[in-house]
Amino acid sequence: MELPAQTFRVTRADLVRYAGASGDFNPIHWSDRVATSVGLPGVIAHGMFTMALVGRAVTEWAGSPDAVVEYGVRFTRPVVVPDDDQGTEIEVTARVREVTEDGLTRLEVTATCLGEKVLSQARATIRSAR
Image 1: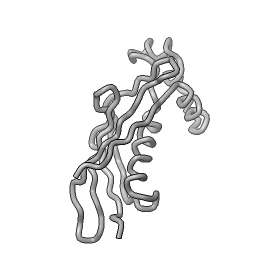
Image 2: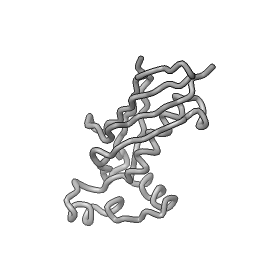
Image 3: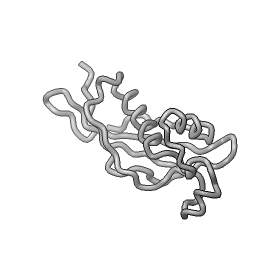
């Protein structure tokens, strides 16, 4: 069973807000000059910001934050955020892998940006609605 896709737009302004909230002011998240000097294709979103957006999708599918029992990912590829008003988009999809007898639903989650997977081994376990 596939769950409905969710899309999140990410702009440079979002990266600035996230940096302020997280305290992660690494210049690869705001300076093209620094990002490209270390071999990146441009400014990239914070990995934990990407993970948080995907977690938001999981929470919405679960129906409430306390219904998320477990959630984990591995970072595969950076989310490059262009310096324009459009930014980029992360699309999050999931399929149900298993529904257990004790009321848990295990999800296989996919997050893509520009058609490329940005996370691997993205999985979540949620409490099924009763």
